[in-house]
Image 1 (cartoon, one colour):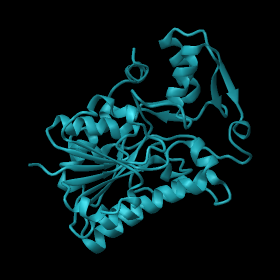
Image 2: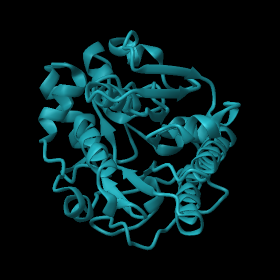
Image 3: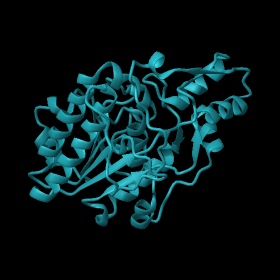
Length: 318
């Protein structure tokens, strides 16, 4: 019998898609999720699958975590605080979730050297002004009195810790930096921009664009992000590496809002909201966030190439 893949945060947006993909391959999955940002609804299609085990609770609260992980094929650690709004309004929860749960999973995996794929974020690039962010770039994080940067710092510490386990304990670790993954099941609950725009366009409400709208972002369909994860899990050369996962088609947030309105045939308008009104005084945003994907393609032979209009339609379910 095949050993299970342990997926933390498996009831989340990305996690649930990964659960479906791995179960479809014939391998069992054990999901650990405290449902703070995930939902069992995301796993509706596989709830009765004989290969699926669900554990409700924090990773660090599992009394037999070391034994559970030791019996696993591998771990995909997706559990984390997500969304700018959650980061701004609950910085302690953000840092504790990101640091404690990652520490727990790495410590559990280390004795038996169970492979770990760790999810990180493009936020770690901070205020870099480079046209494309490369995994070997220096990182420029904002000052500690601006809580917006606590998420980036906590995820960066996750990376440092994971790679330290790889060097000191021989733990097979691969770090993935996600760039704006979108698609079915994602909600705007914690400030995710594309589902928030789609919901507003459908209801005829104004699409609220924060700042001047000239900040650029790249959006990757979750199916492509999952394909990258599946390939990286099967690539020994990815161990000890940090790898960007995303799409490199950039668009301003203002243009994105207008494109959503056009694709959905909505009568909504676009409303510009100052950052200090949307969040808090002194809020800092990244002006541009575009990944270099050379390392991903060199390791796996794959890079996401779906066009943005297709991605928007898939996210909207049209």
